[in-house]
Length: 269
Length: 299
Image (cartoon, rainbow over all chains, first blue to last red; front, side, top):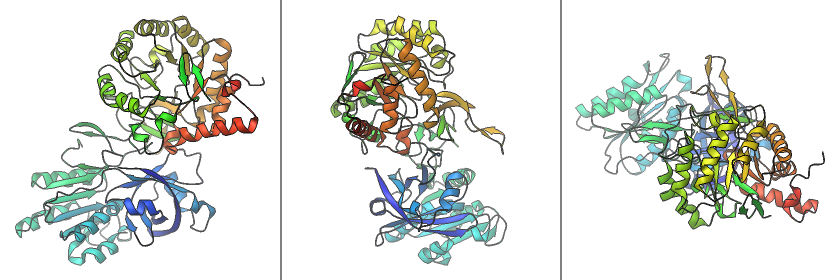
């Protein structure tokens, strides 16, 4: 895999929900090459006293406009600063994106039906996987969870792609869909599909670690392959510094280049 | 641009700070490692170490803390995977050597003596391990013992990497000199902490870690200057170097060569950019030989 550090221009940076934004970057090389589940290691201009880049998963790409979309939640200094950058400001020209970084989703070639589970902004790194599965004619169902209805930022995109029968939502506050965490929807989907004789044979999950741990365990108990996407604090983003290690059955692995997607049964939770 | 660091010829004064560049393979898409003065590899121990628990890093104002804990797969892995690759690239190689005891440091060197290594950097300054590292490097007699033992193990250039977490860095440098070191490198990271006030937890799992980045540059310059005046060993200077001008500042304070560390994380092509920056400085300032800069501080 060849990495590059692409100079990128911010062309849109729009609110997508409470504390949620979608940033769109003109980044032709990244748009061309990024695979589902990979990320970009971003240098954000105008915050030079913060010396580290920030990793962001790619939500979508548009080959015609040569852009990539990144869904992000404001959680710290980097995302707060990013959310304040206007595409019309001088800073918009000054982004650097190292990419495409990491091992993305790799559903087994024989996958006949896939369940995707996205918690919070974890819904975004699964979207290109959903597109790819659909393109290959593999039926996919997505389970989305968020704190509130307004925070289900990716729902509309998934509805457009998969249709309403295959998009199931849960909200922590009960304002939309199933009240509570989305784990129960995921388990039900697994059991229902098995009962119908069309079981899922691949699960991909991205979100808070407890969600990934529970879904990975439910999948394992049912003998279904499951991949998870692990997030760690990261410095280099290219595999050198060993900051972002994940404990696995095969020893410590780097979430940046050995992951971020791992076999769920390999991770020591 | 060529310099000689205690018997190690370098085509230019720029190497990498150990632990920030692995052995260079991960940076090959961004930097031609053979164009560097040298590649300094990640610290290696005899049988490998697992390193510390996560989180291992925290960003701080103009810097970062790390407590990786010298995670490495051991010297055999370095010999069979990374060193052959570096040799094929035509890189000049400094291997950073770690150990828990004088004997372990020497054993790592002995294991590497038939390998394509141009110099050793003895890491008696890592703040993130319970034995070895900084526990040795803060005590002149321990430094002397480790360096003497390593000196017996090799005729190749021996660079001793010093910790800034001491009252007098010159005392430690003198101990290294007395024990037969060919050069010193400084500074390793400054011991520090970061705290999350909301959760009342330390930001690092090991609580303390090593501070690096632009924040430490003034301390590093001061210590390079002190060592330049206090010992006769050539100096590999480092600490917050991100530009050619930063590198020149270290040479003016007495460094023969410099290392780029944390800057590799924000810009993976930092090393190449620093080399270009030094060349540009020399051109603009009418400096014919980069060695003219060494110790040329007007103080």
